Length: 104
Image 1 (cartoon, rainbow, N blue to C red):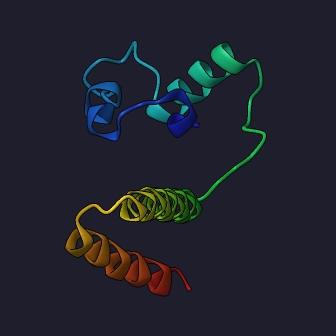
Image 2: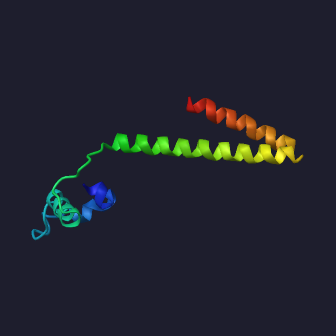
Image 3: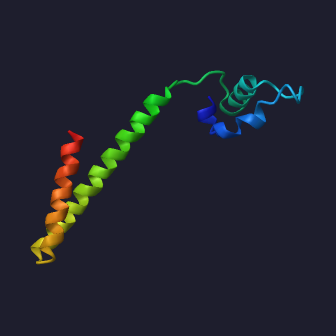
């Protein structure tokens, strides 16, 4: 719930201070209260583990990198037809082959 609210875990120390400031709610109750107030429900619809979130972000990042490399490769091949720098083009082709080999 805290992740969906966008709370920073480094700031939880100032929020979880109910021993010194008894008027504050315990941290778990405070997060549940904020979640209910913002989203209008008591529990998240889709509970995700941190490992799943990281795995999905890594997959998106690698797909984006492959798309960028493929686009750069196509643009350089297009410029090669016009007689531009062949050494640069061959280095990009080698780099693209490495990226596609890692994706498999």
